[in-house]
Image (cartoon, rainbow, N blue to C red; front, side, top):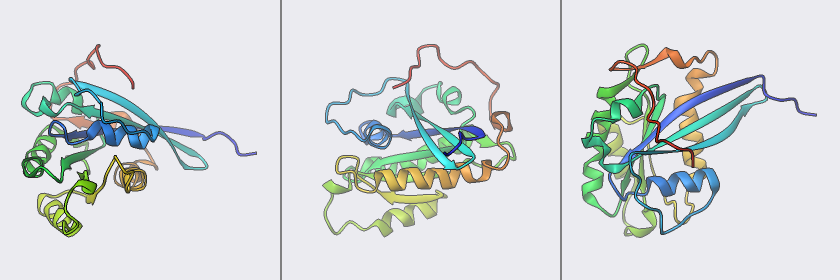
Length: 206
């Protein structure tokens, strides 16, 4: 009989991007394997939790923070970003403006949250709704953009048709955020460029 994991690790991962790019849809597809056309716009921040068995001895609790698209212009992002160990920046491949704005989201993350050693947290660029763009759209364009902007990885995906969502989202996040932490992880080893503040009382788990 397989025993229980000896260690549990909490990894806080941010999911950011412009309004309507499909952040909530990607999270719901990954965590619950469901898709809906009728998600309400996120106000502030929502949460979801994905349990991942990293190995026989380690269980990773992947806490996904779904940040509202308009929050980059607000004052709460420093609070929301605190203690994150990785992030996803999501864009809609069918809306050029959302692709162009990923650089601003990356800059926002880099300026407000970092690892204890001062390095930026790893950030993955996801081009969502690839099922709705012309077949000629190449993943290499997204990868080139990601490389130019300093993203850890870049991938095209579609929450609607489940294309690459579970594989890419799960394995790449764990590879980027969890691998360096597995040997010795402590939440207090991560910091933001601001003084600690309490989490918003209105936040809730999905």
